[in-house]
Figure 1: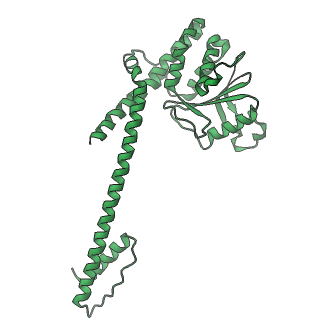
Figure 2: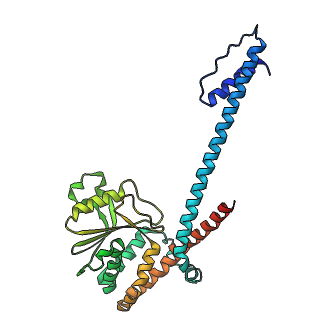
Figure 3: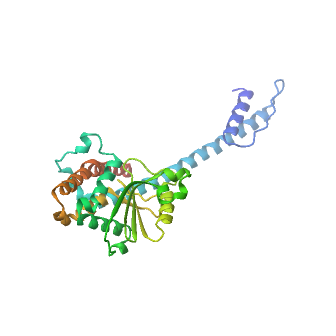
Length: 297
């Protein structure tokens, strides 16, 4: 290797480390052995420092990845343990999904429409009151004993209809999936199946409902397959598993349902299993297997 190549190599290594540029004088006519040895020593020193930095970063990355894997395993184990009791029930189910056949199984609006129907007393009678009570109690157990004389259910409620001052605002046209109100209590449900909330969505909903229903107690739920809470911490996460458990919990009330609303109730229980719960359990089990492989790697 000639001297010029050595100097260029030093400069490249120095630049890659963001170190001060190594100042070396290269003269075509006259280069003594001492300068060559000095250049070689600098190059060697820089290479050692470079290798040490690479190894340090590799160890930090490995340590960080290890922590992430441990957290995933911990979370997966917790989730799997909660839903293990459903495995046999759902796996052995021979039912099929009508919503899948018409390609509407992941349709948020359709799921919201069915939930709204089950919460409407003119459709499901006393079942609706029990369903509403369990949902507000899920948000805050202190609301369970509330006196409920009537229920009004609204779908796709624009924010500017709750607060007219928002009529000229960008957020005025935003729509809340479900608002269920009774005397002194209002329940807000935002439903997410395959999407997540847009910027400040639950925050805007909370602030608007808080102003529009200032005299009422409020309950805020964000429904999704995983049950994650909203970006606005006032929105409590409720999973479709939790919804299924609530519907099963009030199964005794189905004796009060007429034929058409009973069919709706049984239909939706089956659709919950086939369209959301079964796929969710399958993915959880798959995640457990992959996490065990990672842990043993």
